[in-house]
Each structure stands twice: as structure tokens, then as C-alpha cells.
Image (cartoon, rainbow, N blue to C red; front, side):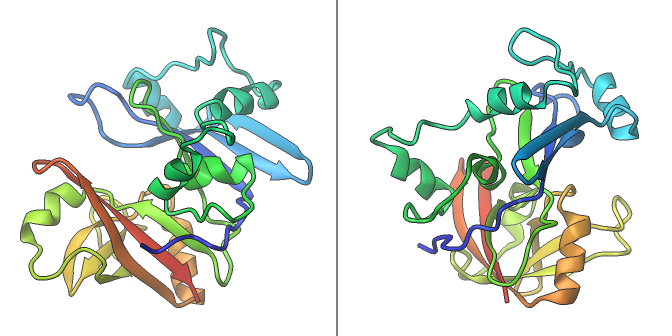
Length: 231
């Protein structure tokens, strides 16, 4: 099992949302953004964006802890989201870290932990997405392969722990920033679209070594994660 031994502290985290109702869009909509500036955490809703309007049309509601969030209370919103993480003194905390391939000996802030785990709950559709803007040489990440269950049936040979390659797909009809993940030239899924723009820049500046690190979920809907490092 590969483990993350170098944590890269995020500078920005996107608050994303997708409908819990599977009959609706499965797209992740960016609805807010956290920015870390020294010892302060700033937050704002992305209410002036097309994605925010689309999210509202899909049923998104700006609600936190029985109170509607607003940009004047970034710490309260951050604290509510931080409660999704387990207490660090729990006896199974190391087991929790292992799910995300985080070495229990590394020093990781709550801000970084939200980015590295995405802090998802099945009940509300929220997730936290690291924009990767602070990525640098040596950084390691463990991310879900988006859409893996659509492509898994076409994959052949050794899959788990095999090396994969990130490729920019500028001709992709859905997203010109799309980054595909390929196993021996076979498409096995994509990078989360909210990370794709920055990952394209990373691919230009670094060598990225990646492996299909885990496959779980169900037989009908497997979920895969990729472990990668910037060199």
C-alpha cells in the first residue's frame, strides 16, 4: 500500500455540491471557496457564477447547521464542515487515515485534511475539493477516478496497482480542460473537473507518476482511486 508521506498544504478549497437524488445531475457544482491567508480562513459563496445558478436549479440550498450561511461567518462555516472529520483521539483514527492513504505519522492540518479526504457525507452531496494551486515537487495525492465504473468493463490485464497516465483532452466535447486517466492506453476515467484546469498546468511543469491504487465499491459500480506524486 502506498502512503502519502508529504502533505502539501492547500491554499484554496472549493466547496462543491451535487444532487443526492441520482435521477438528477451527477455533476459536481462549485458553490463556495475557502482561501487560507496566513492565520485566517476566508470564505465566499460563488453566487455570481453559472455553476451556482445551475446548482440552485438542481435543488441546492445554502444551509449550514439550521442557519443560512453567509460570507461574514467563514469560521463558522469552516467549523461545521470540519465536524465531518473524526476526532483525532478516536481509537480507529489511523484506520480512517488509511482509507485515504495518509501516513499516520505526517503532520496534517484540519484545512489540509478536508482537502485530502474531501469530507463527503452521503446525506447532503457536499464535498471539499483541493484546487491543487499549492502543488509542488514531491506532493502526493490520492483521488477518485471519476467515471471508473463506466470504463472498468473495457479494461484488461493487471489493473490494481498498475501505473496509469494523465492525459489532457483538449478536444473533449464536454470539457476542453478534461484530463483522462489511461491504463495501457485504455481510458479508465477522469480527474474531477474542478481540479482539471490546475492539473493541466501541473502536467506541463512536472513529471507525474501515478498508480491505480485501490478499487472498491460494488461489482456493478466499482470505485477506483489513483495515487500520484509530482516529480
